[in-house]
Structure formats: structure tokens, C-alpha cells
Image (tube, rainbow, N blue to C red; front, side, top):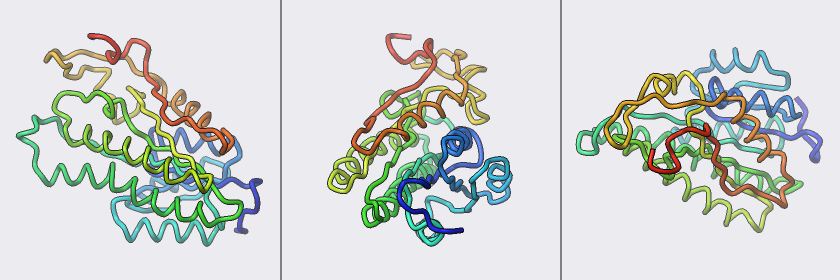
Length: 252
């Protein structure tokens, strides 16, 4: 495959791209003309996802593994010579537990994927975007409403997403001299396999178990695409998308 030249071939990397939000966003980016790289831990699932998308390839990598992230970005640079968009989407959760009942190993696992993984990918994407010609690119981080308001019994996940918000802002500041923008989308209750329990009922802040509304994952993909398609002179630093009736604003 030949290397991209200029802005005619925009290269996008989506981590956690084998299913859910990552796959929906990947499809939207490919439909908009991006050459798409789907990354994740399950090569077979990635290949199945990429096989149904024009201009998509699948590259396996565990974002929490420094060496695997380096190999992923080395491969992208060798194939295409540049990267125009990184969507840091790979993430994981933990079983609900009060903070005093959380196993430190579980804490580290969530932080390593959700925060360290985003850092490792951002680090390599930033370096490539800084030295490529034309210089610059965009990084979009998949945060969460938990970056603002946590659910009960969710300390590892909430801490990782609060940390991701800090990484987003620091990256945006560091990227200014190099035409590298960074923003974050905070998503509430997108309908995926991982959020199926939300529609059935989850614990609220007052201890009740209540079902919550969800939105189609394609709406999230449209929001990410809007952020991605802006010229590099503009950025959406933070965007929240959620169901209108989700118990987030107000007192529930």
C-alpha cells in the first residue's frame, strides 16, 4: 500500500475498534473518506469488522502494552507515512464495588487500559503528527459522563476517566505549536453490548435500582465525525452526548 500524500488520504486509527462505539465510529470515518485502521486485542474480531468496511485494515494491539503500542504505530507509519486522526476509544470497566472492597490488581487493570493506554497511544500519535508533512493532526479521547459525575461503586473507572480529561487538556496545550488538536467526547448510555444492563436497571446515587434511557451508537459516531471533520484551526475541546432523559443534569 502506498504512503499517503498531502491531505487527500486522511489516515485514522480507532482503538477498541472491533465492536460497539469503536466500530460505529470507524464505519462513519471510512464513509467520510478516511483510510481506517481498526486496532484491538482480538485479531479475528478486528478482521471481521474491517472486512465489512471499505478502506479498512485490522492491526492487533493491547493498548496497555508499551511494546505492542510501539509496534502498532511503527506499522502505521511504515504503511502510510502519517496519521491524521487518533480516536482513543479502547476501554474497560470493573465489577461494581465500594472503594474499600476494590482489589488493587483490579484498580491497576482499569487504569492501565483506560488511562495509560490512552497515554501510550497519544504519545506515539503526537510524535508522528509533529514530524509528518503536512504537520499536525487530531486526537479525540473517548471519555465518559463518569469524567464528571461517577456512578456508585465505580472508583477505578471514574478515576481513569477523570484522569483522561486531564490528559486531554494537557495534550491540547502541548499540541498548539504543532497544529495538533485534542478534544474529548463524554458519552452517556450509548446502546452497546457492554451497556445492556443500563436499560434493565442500575444503581442510582440514592441506592435505587432504576432503568435508564439509551441512545443509538450511530448518534455517537455522528458526533465524533463532526469533531474529526473540523479544520485543524478549530477544535471541540469537550462534547457531551447522552439521552435527553438520562439522570445526569438535576437531582434525578
